[in-house]
Image (cartoon, rainbow, N blue to C red; front, side):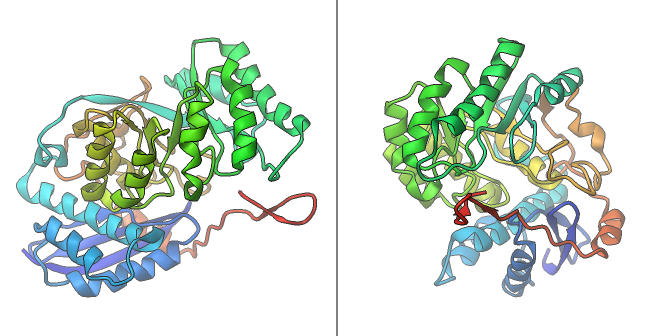
Length: 382
């Protein structure tokens, strides 16, 4: 079997799909995208196509190493996301060619389902109680929301108290019937993170995500030593080498590699194993589409330290399309009990509606995250 072509489909809400075709008619699907930079990653995917056309798609490890190690300038969000999407598609092809789900190729499942959590609210947290109640009716009991709005390098206690009040309201309203995590989204500097985490301790959030930017990860250990709250991070780390630095520095309790950003299934399995050796849990980042989620589930089902899985159903970014809009087998992604179950169909287990993708890709899609500014006019982290 040989790879013959790569086709890409950029579609709403902010997704990019790649189809890898072979001379035997078996095709695989991947989701290589950096949110807000889909066109850039799309160009990188086609550049990669020049390297892998004519190659045997079953030699996944060789192709991964070739795409990573033969590039003098390597790593980073664009290149690792392009590799990730190709890697997902190659695993999809291999499973389909052998008639088994990818989890069987990875040694078989160590669990049958994983707890799913749902995003509540938008970029700026406000009253989210109504949203939580709606999702509880579906079966969810675990949620995540933005932990704060934009904060200045050193901000006021009034601004801090506004964010803390939201978390207090949620805990007071729902008690222990739910779990909720708070995403600082890299909006908080190290000095303010220290203040925020101390004030949030009585609210008992499940974890605090990205309390400071990944490039300042040396503060994770300092913050962890001063707080009882669990720290999660990793959506803006792109390889085992990025994660090694965090694991060696300690402080992080939950790693969140993104299967569409951090080199795909091949790389994230290694990241997960590294995390397990440090007694750190795995919770893959996934605010994207169905192929990304199917890839996450493959890793979740074979990694002992996988603890919880993000998914994008109903997320505020999903304008114009939803998680299962382009899927032919939505019943396999049922979350009515608040869990995501192991996919069992051959390959990644997701059947993509190519006709719907082709139609949707005819519309120009160009999503960009907003640009925020502080009251003094300086640029704020989003």
